[in-house]
Length: 322
Image 1 (cartoon, rainbow, N blue to C red):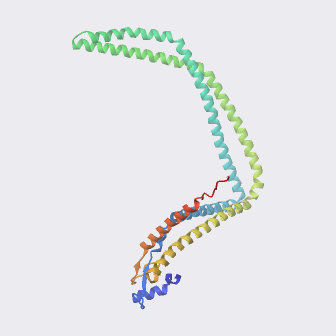
Image 2: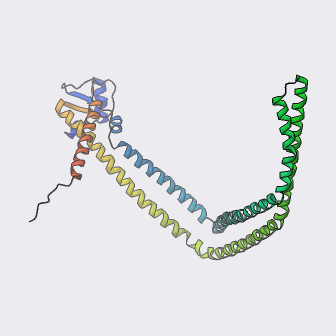
Image 3: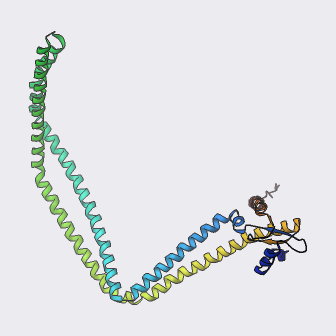
C-alpha cells in the first residue's frame, strides 16, 4: 500500500495536464503539515526543536567566543583578570554593605537608648510646657462652647485660640530639636568610631583582593595554554548532547509521520484511492481527506493513552498462604 502514497513531480505534472487519471482511479490529497500539527506529540516535537536550536545557538556562541579568545592570549588574560576584578569588586561591595548594615543597626540601638535618656531628662520641661498651654487652650475652648457671643467676639476668640496653639506647637518643635541635638551630640563619637572601623575593614578587604588578583595572574600563563583543549572539551560535550537531541527529534518525528502514513494508508485502502498527494496540485480533482486523517490521529492518541494506562496497572496476583 505504500506505493499508493507516491506523489512524484512527473506524475503531478501529468495529472495537472489531463485533470484526472485515465483509468478512472480515485485521487485524494492530504495537507500533510496540518495533519502533523494536529498530532498529540506535535507540541513536544516543537519544544524539542526549540531546545535543540537554543543549544545549537549557544554552541555557536561558545565557539566564536573561544576562537576569539584563543586569537590572542594576552587579550584573554586581560579579560580574565578584568572579570575576576569585577567579581572581587562586587564581593567587596557586598561585604561592605553587610558590615555597614551591622554597624548601622548597632548605632540605631544606641541612638534609641540616648533618645530614651534625653526624654527622661527633659520630661519635666516637656510637662511644664504642656501645662503652660493646656489651661489657656482649655479656657478658650470652654468660652467658645458655652458662651453666646457676637460673631466678631467669636472670631476674635478663635483667632486667639489658634495663636496659642501655634505658639505651643513652636515650643514643642523647639523642644524636639533640642532633644535631637542632644542625641546627636552624644552619638558623634560613636559615629566616628564606626567610620574608623568601616575604613579599617575596607583596607583589609582591599588587601585580600589585591593578593588574590596577584595569585590569579601568576596562574594565568599555565591556565591559558590549556584554553584550546578546554574549548574542545566543552564543545565536544555540547556536540554529544546535540547529537542525542537530534536523534530523539528524528525518532519522534519519524514516529509521528508513521502514524499519519498508517491512517492515510488505511483510508486509501478502505476508499479505493489510487494516489494520495501530500500537497495540493492545480487542475487535479481530488478528495481532501485531511479532516479524516486528523480525526484518525485523535482516535489513535486516545487508544495509546488507554493502552499506557492499562500497562501501568499492576495486577493483584497475591494469594492467601496458610
